[in-house]
Length: 309
Image (cartoon, rainbow, N blue to C red; front, side):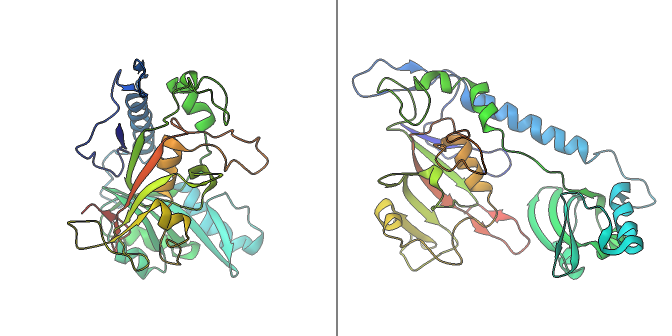
């Protein structure tokens, strides 16, 4: 069975078998076991997250006076001027080479070149929502950005797959805790999950076992190292499981610079081997921790978005 994991933020579901409702994961010679509505639950969860984000960004029409700059953001710029290096910094503000940088959420149709003109960088563009990084002293100039409706500090988030995976009920079908699942468990073994997103960190332990990578095939549409494209296509580079294990997909320009594809792959199929930072091993495990992966790394556009070819 093939399952293509579809994140509402980025991906378009491909015309292959999908995991919906009471679809089953079937092992050879076994009666299919009912699988919970994992994808439906994930869609509801992602929908709630996006609704929360849009609500936070205040979709109400901006006033004719101009865009809304979050008061806390304005206060930070003033505090930096008055207190210098000693002002208290929230997680969204960091220091690099003696300069204050701020991570932002921007709402509206903002030209990415305007952000770059202010000395900043654009990370992600999803419709009217943009994430960006800007020198703190350039925040005041944001009020002149054409198309901007609202600007606010980016908010910190925490990994919660230790909560979201049990919420779907997937762990009840594993038959036991990771990593030693019983043979009777439904863990995604002999299932292929497809990720069409910003790429994947092939070195991440969550996508590897003691014998090597769980990624069967990877199509990097940004070309990556020299390798031919998939059959019937004229762009990008394709890498097999053996290519990845041999280190042929390793360079300074390949992988997942946005991190979004790696995140989604972890939600779908992370095996928990990469749990760290003082957390117990296998704390963060995806829905199908023994599934194989097929990954498409979409092209990066100059404005920070990615394109689906």
